[in-house]
Length: 266
Image (tube, rainbow, N blue to C red; front, side, top):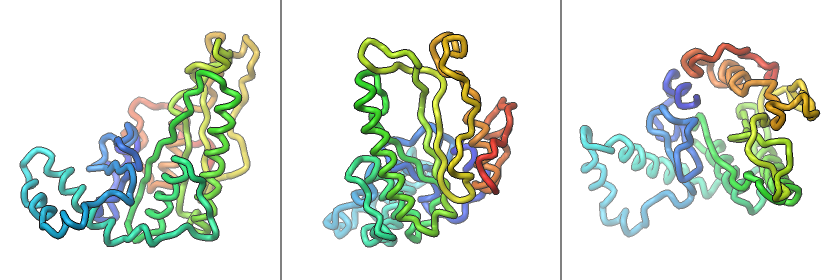
């Protein structure tokens, strides 16, 4: 959906950093975007100085020219390295006394904060948080995961300060969970999930849901929490109000549900 949105809107610049995933892989949501970057660690995305001094990057630039296969992503990667070097992200420290937790998610959000506060014209940043597939010992592991998420988001919010008004953070799960406990003190994959939103124009401090209940008669197929709000409704509202607008019919083909959940004030 995000890749479709980007393909339908005009880039604000020719930067390679229009869309970036702080990850080893391009997420499915960015499929269709023009040369999205996937970088596991922004601080390590460069050539060693010996390689730079040897002139090898220039050789690569001359080698990967259209119509050779992979010419476009190779050129985007080389441009990204040049842009990162000029932006000097390592010199951008967390603002407003923010202290990021020493966790995987904390480090990724710290890098996202550096990108946003840099001179790079980044429009969308995607990152993932592992360790949520709690098939066993849910009481212990869910507490750890939620604490990591809360601490990382709190640090990011503090870091952004007034810039948070131009940022929208969406946190959502790939899948829901079943209601019933399994034999390993965990819960297996199910339907209903949740999403968190934070940032400019978000009507914060509210829960947007019609709670369906946990009684057996209220569950989907007797096992799962019923879905009351299609995630595409929230995403459609975010696209229209926070991401320059988009043709929802093209971003979400076949979607006929509501396109406003009242999550955003503008």
